[in-house]
Image (cartoon, rainbow, N blue to C red; front, side, top):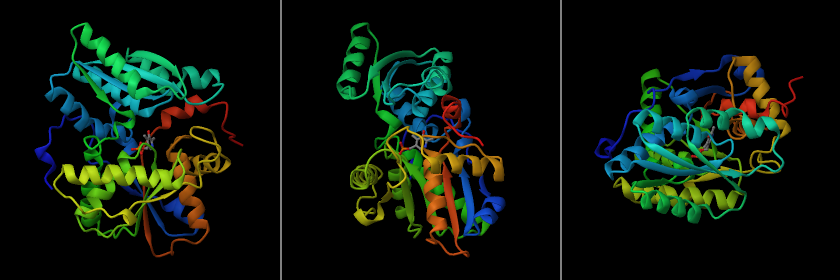
Length: 333
Ligand SMILES: *Cc1c(COP(=O)(O)O)cnc(C)c1O
């Protein structure tokens, strides 16, 4: 595996810090908790999509594209990072936004990520939930072509084998930091949605023979579907980097008990987790992804899943801008 063989543009501030959380560790009385700060990737308030976009946008540029077409929920962090990156690289961007949350508040419809999308001047097309977005993106691409442009479609979350390279690379970066710090990682935990983060990480962890188990905390789908999605993408990604066969089905583990009523719908445990991290460590997490991921980690610690001597690393995937979209839905008392 040699990732510099793949085209890449520089968008992220790397390496992101790997930090110990002593006050959270004390509060939970459990294992030592560490955080890998991918909320600090730097682009337009950061987040996990930036690492993926370094590879996705390089592939687009290599194909001669001048217009990026992509998709996400109204409060998509992926869309926000993509439109910012296209500004930086001088590309146009056509965005299909899905209304995945019913009866959105004014905050949800206009603040947080979507506010920044407008600031970056992206062409936003809003669609109802359940639209066939693959077909809709093809249509937009066709329109771009008919006007003489060269479109490139980046799937939701940049979760294809190209975007996943960003998280293969993150696994290498994390292992090298842990080696330098003399830290033995007993478990790595992250939120998992469109699957590219977990798929890329597991490929990197396995290709390096790290023996670090990875747990994805689901934010939308049920467990079987989530694991299948991650596994399929991991296999494709491993093939793509010439490491076929490194990932077995049992390496892909997702816990989807913390989704609550659905994608983007707040849960009490997410609310508690966000407040706990803010008030013990001064850290910001988001209601849709990292907050539910944290809620899962906190609950598993309370249930005694991990021993006090173990080291857990939580990968912070970013998204805190979405807090503003939920300003009227979080209970801060
Ligand atoms: C997209 C996203 C995730 C999930 O990553 P996937 O690669 O889509 O599984 C987690 N956290 C945040 C903040 C995100 O924006």
